[in-house]
Image (cartoon, rainbow, N blue to C red; front, side, top):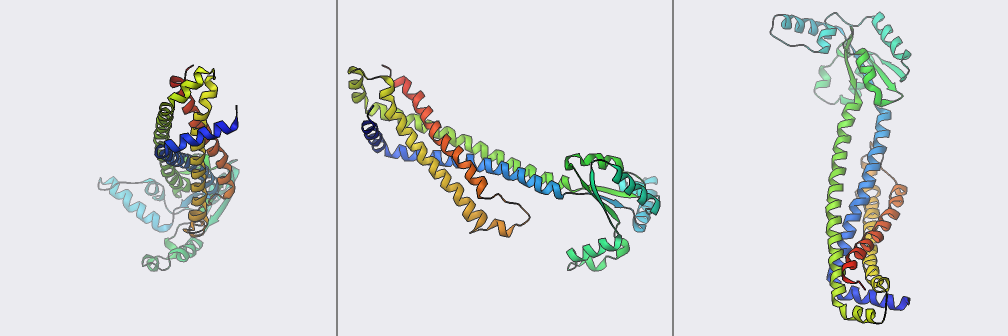
Length: 323
């Protein structure tokens, strides 16, 4: 098969259906950009999970004297039927945490195999940290060191198993609450996963639209050249020989759309993450992906950009170009 003939037929087909070809390129480009963006979003969420789960602690807050007074009052109201209680109320009603209880809690934590490290924070240290973070607020001026709670900050080897620590210590005497920071992080990741699912749904819709446009474009092109293909049948040309120019037209349009999608992904990384908007500098709490992750997705985008239109054209042509 002569390459010159194939290339000339591709050029003729693209020029005859210029408007539909342009629509195919835009549709394929947008759908593949969403496809690449979904892959990057999934990788970003996984990377953020590893980054934040490693920093997430289980905090065990201990009862202080004020907690004990409030718990006793709340317990009295509950006994009278005029108020409710909570875990902190139930445990702190027996008084502030004792030195013996603190030693027992710390000893049990260090004996747990899933615990990586245990850090004790006194009330004075908690007050100092609070003032550093919220010292400019009106509430900070009314807080005194004796109102702050002592706590143990527990780092886990596997943050997924935080419930083991929670179930072992919640409700015990001397412990006000057991707070796991991972629960708040999970809410954020749940929202990000929903956004990723929404992007995938939009990508599928755009992909269907692109496939329909490709099929219609190929059909129109085959119909407009029915005389040429009829002559080729009469002289004994094979179905494959007749179909190749049409398939290549779709492949070229898909490749251009894929290149457009790659340009959008790289522009997003450059103008949104690194420069321009500069999210990497403005939101330093998030460990954004680098260029390596973006470039690794481009071959997938290009491959699908070539394969998807080619397969759609091949299936559509089987009905129109039978020998």
